[in-house]
Image (cartoon, rainbow, N blue to C red; front, side):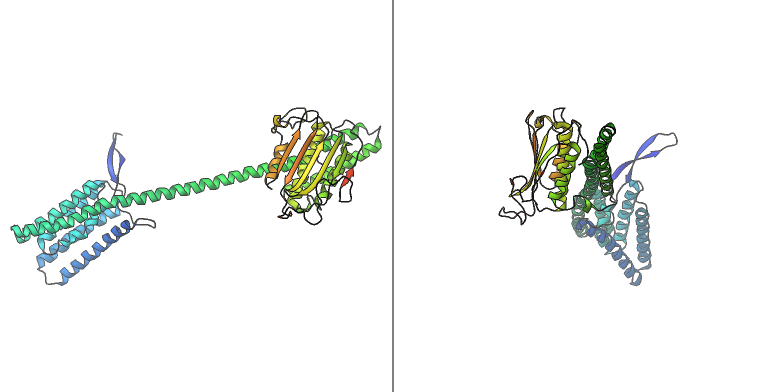
Length: 468
């Protein structure tokens, strides 16, 4: 069913007048359209094929010349009008109604010329649907077609009661079919339009989802890079600054210590360069946390004790885990030690690594001044808390969440701090037993189980803030 929409036409004086235009004749069907639309389109094409066949029979058959040429002329006029309207679907709707008027006149004239042409009314039922913009005009136009063939047939055979009754009954039957078609078509078009709207909404939703996923991916990548920079480069550069200041201050009085600090600066700078290459993808990530997790953490703790002079007590058994887990444990250790140096004012740090039924556990404790964990929440103050806006503990939680792990912080002012990191271990057996070579938690420090006790001199009061 065609639809009418207001259009504007500009007059020379500039005033606008509204004029209805034929916005949609029955379009060519497309995939996804209801079967009814396909049937109407096929009916329209089939009707013209039958009309052409009737005309061919009229030309070749034994038909009087006047009837032959008259019927050919009428069909030619109808075909020309049909072609004009079909070629200009954007014309005002009155052009389509003009075609329907021509169709009614041609049907009546053909019924008047010869018997049997009344069948053309049945063949043209779909055109009353196609070229009307609403249901009511389509029903009225179809009814006028029924009247036209009834009157045309009566004029041809005479106005007897029997002939008029027969023609009226047959026309009424065809008209009833036309009304049914007219009523069903808008519903079919509504289904088609609703499906089109749903497809459009689905496409828009998919596009929005893709864009949202891109934005989320970009945000997650920025967060990951920021976390990596904070855990590696930023701490390393801060360490270099503090070590350089200490070395310059003690260059004359303590040359040996200054030389050691310069070596630490060089080592930290080289490690920062390696980390930078990993971040930009110019170096393989396999160089990070190379070796076992115990070896990696022990190396980090040795550097921490050397740079800060704090006492470090470590129990580091050989625990089996993959490289991503080793990196996560390393970063958590580095962040915890950095917070100890910056905020805790501690003298002793304890580190215990263990594999248990729940996975791998890493415990880091200090005897510093502690803080109130609930008051930190990613921010805090001077009493051992992580500075507001820092990555700190929140970065650790986010990193561990990628492995299904978690971090638990236990602390109170004056009682030091305990950080417990738990990472589910893929190597742990279903029955809770430990993998070969792993050692249970609680092995005393310094035992042959792979534990190590690293002891450095007591802190001199200079806090080292950097990568470890």
